[in-house]
Image (cartoon, rainbow, N blue to C red; front, side, top):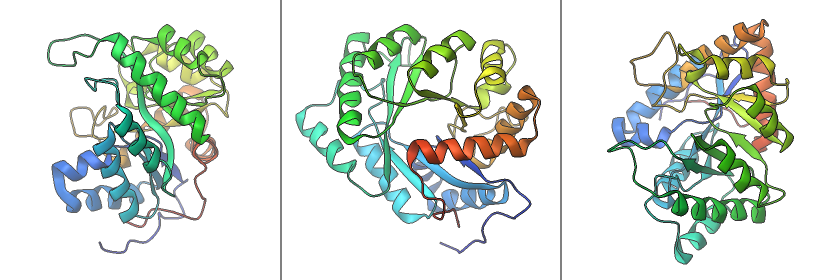
Length: 279
C-alpha cells in the first residue's frame, strides 16, 4: 500500500458514514480499494465506516479496517439474509464487535420492497434478525445502522421494543414527519446520493429541516452514485457531491455541512479525530 498525504488543507474534512469497501475489494481487488481511497483523500474524505452484511462480510470489513488507517467497520446482518443468525453466528458476531475498530451494529433492518430477484426473505424472519441485532447493540452500548426500505412503521416499532438503542437511519428515504419520529428516538438521518435524485422531494425536505446535530452523509458505495455521477459505480470520493447537494438544500456553505456531519459521525461512532485516511 502506497503512503498518501492527508487530504489537502483546502478541503473541509468529510466522513463517509456508510461505504462498502469490502465489496470494492471483492470486485476490484486491493488495487481498486487503494485507488478509491486515494480519490477519497483528494476529495477531502478523512474517515470511512464500512458496514457488514452478515458474519463473513463483517469479517471482510474487519480486514479492510485493519489494513487502512481512517477506516472503521460495523458488524451486521442484512435483512436480505435468508435466515436469522443462529446461536453460533450470534456468538461470532458478538466476538467480532469486541474488535477495537468495530464501531457499531449494522447493516440491519427491514426491507418490504418485493421484486423478483431482489430478495425473498419474509418479514417475520427479518423482524427476528433485527430484534437479535438490536439486543446485541444494546449489550455492547453501540449504535445501530438501520436499513429501512418501505418499512418505516415496522422499524420504529422494532426500535421501541428495545429501549436504549440509538443509531442512524442509513440512506434515509422518509419525509420530514418521519424524520421527526426518528429524531425523537435519538436516531440520526444519513443522506446518500438519493437526496440528489429527481422525485426525491420528501428526502430533500427532510434534509432541509433536520437539526444541525441530526444528520450524516454517506455514499453506500458502490451503490447509489449521486448526481452528477449517476450511472457510474459509486466511490467514497462522491460523498462530497452528496454533501454539496445537502448544503444547497439547507442554503449554507459546504463547509458547514461538512463540519456538522463530521462532528456527528465522530460522536455517534466514537471515531478518534487523529485516525485518518492515508490511502
